[in-house]
Structure formats: C-alpha cells, structure tokens
Length: 307
Figure 1 (cartoon, one colour):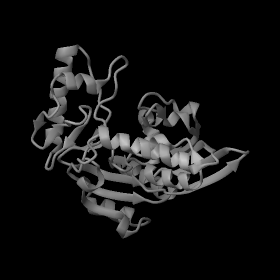
Figure 2 (cartoon, rainbow, N blue to C red):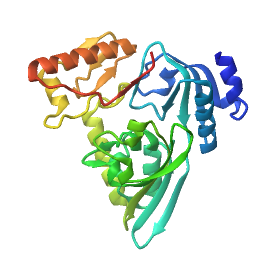
Figure 3 (cartoon, one colour):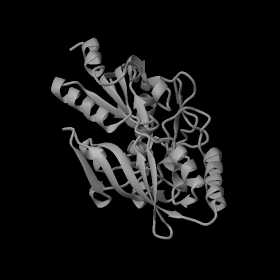
Figure 4 (tube, one colour):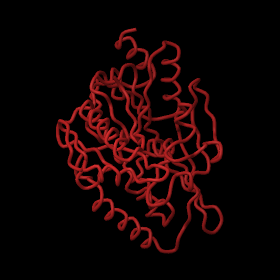
C-alpha cells in the first residue's frame, strides 16, 4: 500500500492539516534528531485514535505512538507507516470533600501546562512533575518521576485503548506501575486520559515556591540549554548511573554531535548536528566503559524508534 493510499484512507475522517506526509521527526522530539515519518497524524479525540488503530490493523500498517517526543530517539532513516501523536487536551477538575481534588487530564496535555492550571486552582501534589517536558500520556506510560515522587503516587485510574481498538479503564493497581514502566509499555496500550488524586491547599504561594525551587535545581544540575531526551539511562538498583559514568571519566566525551554532558553525566546531549547514529554509538561506548570498570549493566531510559 502506498503512502498516498494510506493518506486518502486517513483523510476520510481526519482533516488535511492533521495529516503530515514525509514529516521530519526532528520537529517532534526534544533531541531534535531523526529521519522522516511516512505519515504523521495528530489525533485530537478518542474516535480519531480508534480510527487510526483500525486502519493500521486492517491494512497491516506499522503504528508508532508519540506524545511530546521528550523521551525519544528516532533513528536516522525515520519511521515507516503512521506516527500517531495523541493531542487530547481536556482538563477537568472536581472538588471532592474538603481538600481532595480529582483532576482528569487528556493524554496530550503537556505537564508544564497542567502544573500552571493546578497552581491557579491552588491544587498541590503535582509540583514534582512541573519541569518534566513530556505529556500526561507519556508520563503515565513510563511512570515518570522526579525528586522522590512518581506518577504511581497520584494516578487513580486511566482510560486507554488496546491494540484491537477497545477502550478500557484501569485502576492504579491494574496499571502495574514500577520504576519507569507500566502495563502500557508492556502491552502497547495507548493512554487516552488519566485521573489524578491531588489536594487543595489554602495558599498557592507554597505551590509556586516549590515549583520555583525545583526549576532552579533543574537549571543548575541539568543541561537544559541543549537538546536531549532527558536522563539517558535508568538508575540501577544499587547504584546511580550518572555517578558511574562520571567516574569513568566520560563527561565531555563526544562522538560527532553527541556528547556526554559536562554538567550531568547521565545526559547525552545534541551539541548541534548530532545524528541518531552518533547518539547510539556514544551509548554503546558508555555501556562498555561502565561494564568494564564497575561490572554493571546499565539500561536505557530513553526509547529508540525507527530504522
């Protein structure tokens, strides 16, 4: 099936401006790296997502789902088939009891935007996530966390769609949250919206102060001035990966345009014109050096897609 034929199928329901052909993934990842997607589709509601899943299933078209692309490395030859960007952006706040706030959020909402809405409504418990550059869908999928908190601590339930296009709702327990993973990664479910349990507070200044404090910490410790996909590697069960990389003397080590950050050894950054191949080669050297020096196998936190 040609890309034009797939485009025409998609266009029966989804408007022209939401279907991009031969789209550079550099525009859609925080790493600013990657080849082109055959077709890039922005889905703004649940029906559009189910429609795309049905097309992919019926015509055997590869499907790749993305959010804000902040934890993603796209390979240099791009992505075949359809890349689906979930753009559901509803935010609904329900007051339950004296202090509990039940917040239902579309998977396409960027965490920073939600943090500002919650601040305006004097709702606390989300401060840890304010500086994470992803969307709600991606954050739930990978159980994103920072500063001692994770999404598993605040998620009540999540609506998602399975590979057959069936919509299901999962409780916190059913989402099988663990360190940087969940059932959504294991079973390739697509997050549609999630419901969070948070708290109203009297003084929103305390929320703002906490967000400002964490933002300052990020600016001081992380190389936010360079494109990256955030922390490249997971923490180990009994070690801090960035510390091991630093002790291998790899800070500032460079292949092409990819470099181990001199500010934080856990970040591989794009210094300007890095290719995915540069990043992948650098990752292999980091893994080899840590294994050689410390006998530790380190695992990626970022996801790699494409060819």
